[in-house]
Amino acid sequence: MIDEYSFAIIGKKYVADGDVKMQRIKAVREFGTDLQYAISSEEVPDENILILWNKFNDKEIKNNQKKFNHDTDVLLERFLKRIADKIRAEQEKGNLDVKTFFKIYIDDPFTFYNDGSKDFFVILKRIYTVYKITGIIPTIMEGNFLLETRKEDLAEDVEKTIEEIVTEPKPTEGYATRFNGIIEAVEREHFHNKAADLIDRDYFRRFFSSIELMMDYAPDNLVEEKVPKTKDDEEEPQIPFIDLYIQYQNGKSGMDCSYDMNKASPNTWYVRAREFEKNIWYAEYMNAYYDEVVGTGLVMGKIKEKMFDYLSMYKKRVRAATYNMGNPRKGVYDIYAEVDYIRSIVDVDRCAITCYKHYRDLKNSKSKEEFEKLLKKYGVKESDIDIGFVNTVKEN
Image 1: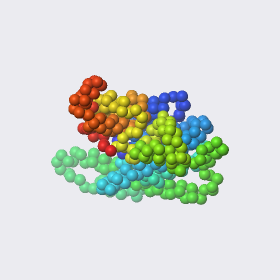
Image 2: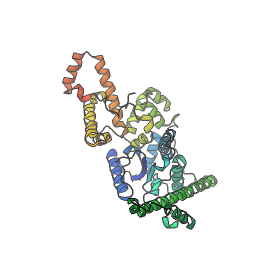
Image 3: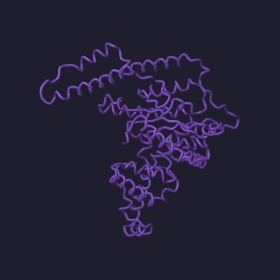
Image 4: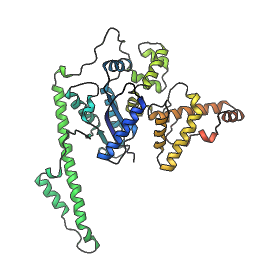
C-alpha cells in the first residue's frame, strides 16, 4: 500500500552511458524491495524518493555545476523543506501528533558522500540537516549509527511504573477474565515502546543539538571545497538555473528566462532546458520542487502533436487502474515507465493537463462538424480523450 507520509533519501551509482530513466526506475524498485524485506510493507511513492547519484567523474560534476548550478545541499534542503511544509499543513488541520506517522528512510549514511567528498563531517552535517528542517528522526536502514533504546535498556523505575499500570485490577468474572493475560501483554508492549520512543526522542534532540554546536565551532577549513573556476567558466547567473526553470514551467517566457540567465539568447535557454530534462538530476529536482509544479501544465516542445494519443492512453491507463486496483497512481507509474518523453512522475499528470488544454482550445475553435472530422482522422472518439473526470488532473 502506498504511504503518502513516507519519504526516502537513497544513494545510487550513476552509469554515464546508461538510460537515465531506467536507472531511476531500477533504483526505486530495488529500494522498495529492500524496504519491504527489512522494515515495512508500506510503499514509498516514487515522487517521495530523492536519489543522490554518485560516482560522477570530475568533468560531469563540473558540467552539472556549470550548466545547471547543481548543488547537493541545495537539492537536499529543498526536498526536506517540501516534507516540512507537508508536516506543517497537517498540523494546521489539527493533526498535532503528525510527526509520529511521518517517516524518512535513509538507505545508508554513506549516501551523503554522493559528490565525491571523503569528509565524514559531511555525513553528520547532512543527517543533522534532515532533523533540523523536518524535526523527524530518520530511519537508517543499513549502517545505522543512531542507536535506539531497547526494552531491556529501560531504567528500573520505568519498568516498575509500567508494571503498576498493566497489573491494575481487571474484571474477575465472565468472559473478560479470559483476555486479562492478553490485555496485560499488549499493554506492557505498548508502554515499553512508548517509553523507549520518548527516551529516544529526547536523546536524539540532544544529539543533533550537539552536532549543531560542533558545526558552529568548526574551523572554516572544514567547509567543503567547490570545484575551482577557470577563465572559461560562465559568469554566475543572476538567478540559479533551477529557479528559472521552475518559473519557466509556471509560465515565465523563455525570452525572460534567457535574459535572466546572463542575458543569453532565447535559443540558448531552450537548448539548456532540454539538456536539463534529459539529465540524471532532473527527476530529483522535480521531486524536490513537487509542490511548485504539481497541477501545472508541462511546457515541452511538440506536445500538440502527441495530444490525442497521450490523452487516450492516459484516460485508459488511469481509469483501468482505478477500477481494477483502486489505485489511479498505478496507471500513472506505468505511463512514466513506458513513455520516453516523460522523465519524471509528476510530468505524467502535467503532460495530461497540457494536452487537455490543447484539446479544449482546439474543440472551441472549430465547429462541431469540423471537430468530429478531425477526431475521425486520428481514429479516436471524444469519450476516449475527455479526461475531465480524472481527479489527478487539475486545471491551470
